[in-house]
Length: 251
Image (cartoon, rainbow, N blue to C red; front, side, top):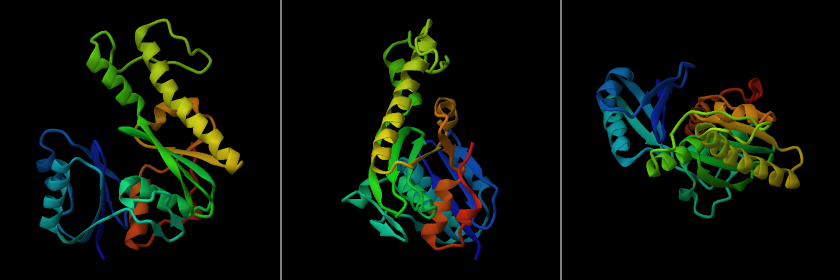
């Protein structure tokens, strides 16, 4: 069966064929629909979609897929699947992207704190037995800075650098980087400490477009594969999955 896996996030679409490793990505820029039409395979047996994108983008993606897929199946968050049991009383309130990452990570049977750094910064605590203990949501450093820049022209939306050894900056762009990234680091560190009070061997796994920026300040963190949502989507769809013993999150 020719299956296409797609992850429609807040700012871009990622996709790959289920039996291939090449990952494609496309931002929701002007001309998104026309570029997407030329970029996707001309025909597939089934398309599996995970979508947290705005309704306009969801409509475009679904329309293009229905033109070339015999069947379109959209993933939904479930209270329980395989080893995973989520903590949310109302499953629909947990984003499907977070659910699919949890589903993939549950197969590894480890106590983990999973951090996604994208439009939002999300934190989820997952026990080795597959029980999701809950999560946290905050603005990502990029969104913090974008919001501050929208309020004052004197506060640039990007630029600057800092390190934990030098948290106090001597220029505005460095101070913004230290403040916004530092807030994210503080939330992640406090969450990891809380998780380790319950499970002392809890590991820190991180992914998302903004993860690389925070990684130098999180020496204990390991990177998840960039297609981790698609891996979880394949697992949700019942497709042959990656050998979970064949990869371990790493730098």
